[in-house]
Image (cartoon, rainbow, N blue to C red; front, side, top):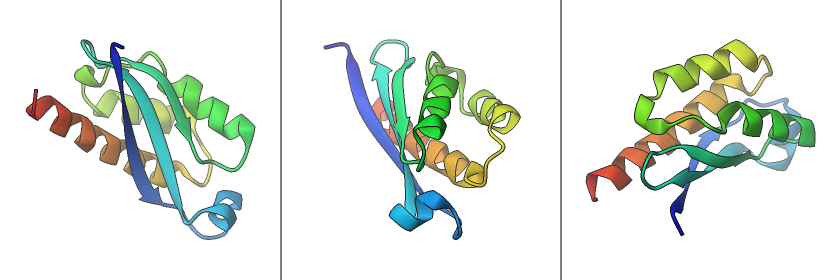
Length: 104
């Protein structure tokens, strides 16, 4: 297997549908080991449409290119209430990624 799995977490704002199910959002990534490309992604938004939108937004991006372009991509395309929580979860998962790289 040439991939590995990471997860990032962040608190959701109150009043969201997903907040009624979870108090935090989780973003999971399956990453290519060599290039850091996001092969697949998931998140715990409440609707299937929202989860699929985030999946499509993240797939294909290489974390080796840094976090800022990915954050900008999310800011440009996701306008829902969970935006700040999604960004925080991405920052968390990127921190996990950097820890993985540091032990290689």
